[in-house]
Length: 138
Image (cartoon, rainbow, N blue to C red; front, side, top):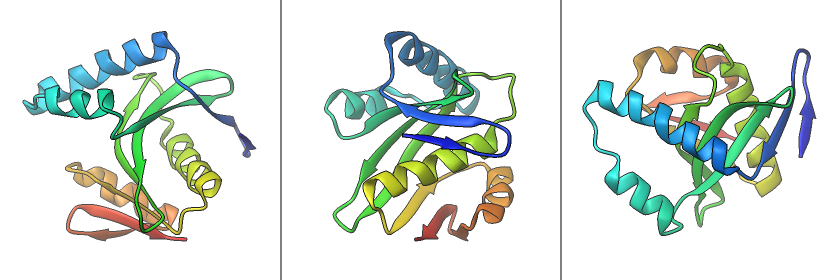
């Protein structure tokens, strides 16, 4: 599925090995800074509890998202990691999550975050904050 927006073409694709390795590396850097162990998270990915989708912006790797679809038809983004740590592509991430929700015919999107700065950013994309969880009714 492709979406053309004002500045970038966004694509959702199955992740390749290079993107998976880069996501693991970048996610590890973030986890180390936060002092978190990712073993349980990656066990959940291996067991198929989370799906993975690579997000391309203008044909270049931008993000990897890990997500699941709930019985209540809600898309829950478990994690998102930048594949280009130098770019400010937050709008790409938000638009891509909306694309995935549309593809799944979701009625809501949710994710948790410990990053307070992120909470300020997501409100302009239609989310409301509930106890460090953000939620968007569709």
